[in-house]
Length: 298
Ligand SMILES: NC(=O)c1ccc[n+]([C@@H]2O[C@H](COP(=O)([O-])OP(=O)(O)OC[C@H]3O[C@@H](n4cnc5c(N)ncnc54)[C@H](OP(=O)(O)O)[C@@H]3O)[C@@H](O)[C@H]2O)c1
Image 1 (cartoon, rainbow, N blue to C red):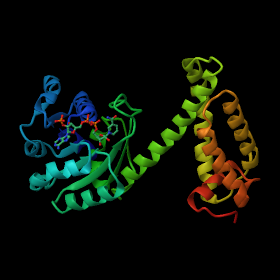
Image 2 (spheres, rainbow, N blue to C red):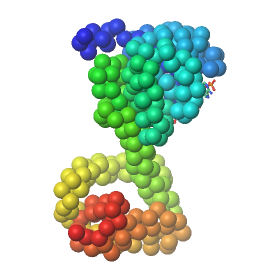
Image 3 (cartoon, rainbow, N blue to C red):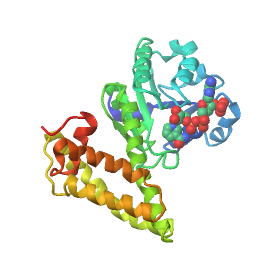
Image 4 (cartoon, rainbow, N blue to C red):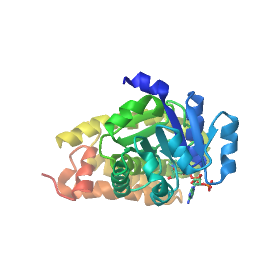
């Protein structure tokens, strides 16, 4: 069956209509798919039913209603508790689990689903609820490549649907890694807002300038990823030594403005450790060596 034929016949069920599950169901409906919905508190399905969704009376009915079954619940224990009693109805279907959890839980869930004759995709919604249904909303999936290929078009109704690989643990691994990345950037932003705010700069005015700076920052990632792969750190973007000195200025300026120094101190600690390990004259991507290995210069 071609991907397109499969797409035309696809139906989707969404189990769990909290903040995220509701947006998922809305996106499937907006893309024109027959969407069956179930929620423990039945009234939460009312608005979706008014928009054209099919109401399932039970979770079992929701599973039986579609080839593609999407669950979005608070945790894996809840998913297991809900689907455990109806596991036999999963046979021949694809379960997509957009519940947040650990890599271990994803592996256990994949084994459990396979044991009931179904295919499994773990997934993570990376762009909050606001962007769901728009092309820039990132959704990462991992697990059965065949299931992803067969349902790629339907899953793309949610946003930018990216398959990371066959190992189901990859989606929760990326989920936590990207969460840390986002927080690294946001911690820097919140510190910067406090710092310029001490001189009376309006957060909105600062955000406009900061947003214009971010393409440069993100452009470093691909270059630095290649350097990390090669294990060679050219210092075109400045040496560890130079950046450590600049970070010292940020700490001093923060102190002078009466702003907490914990965010720049954290970065300074990374740079100091890289310098102590012998990377002072290398490029800044070399800090990864001391993060992942805790070893000195080789
Ligand atoms: N919201 C976000 O921005 C966001 C972003 C990324 C990932 N996520 C992930 O998406 C998942 C759901 O988050 P959410 O924000 O949608 O949560 P939520 O708004 O709190 O909704 C939780 C849902 O789970 C249902 N539920 C809870 N316990 C249950 C049980 N024992 N049996 C059956 N149903 C149960 C609730 O049903 P009732 O309506 O009956 O209470 C509700 O539908 C989480 O894993 C979260 O980490 C959320």
